[in-house]
Image (cartoon, rainbow, N blue to C red; front, side):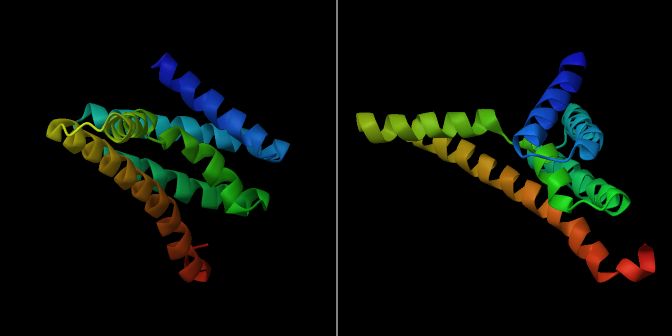
Length: 150
């Protein structure tokens, strides 16, 4: 659990600094990153799929970043982009790319390697889609009904 906290902390903080986020937005970005890691890890622990748990964590980021953006008058993307980097499926993308490189460079016609590479590639693609949809849905919903809710 300490490792998850430190991953969420350092990745969110370092990408916020890399993207030149304002100093007053660093604490909310760290909170969003750690919260997203917790949500994703606990949902995976309770046997939810990777795509669904990533979607719920991204929905959390979208919802809470909307609140922080109204609170501090900073654009939503400052919070959402820096804190959603922790959700990127790096291992699946790496395995897919290694498989595709092996297929293309060595002219391997191994059907199992092709299927496995496609599996990892599609899993990565669906997780990226879950991140995008999870961040966009709350912002679009609140923008449509802003005066009734806020």
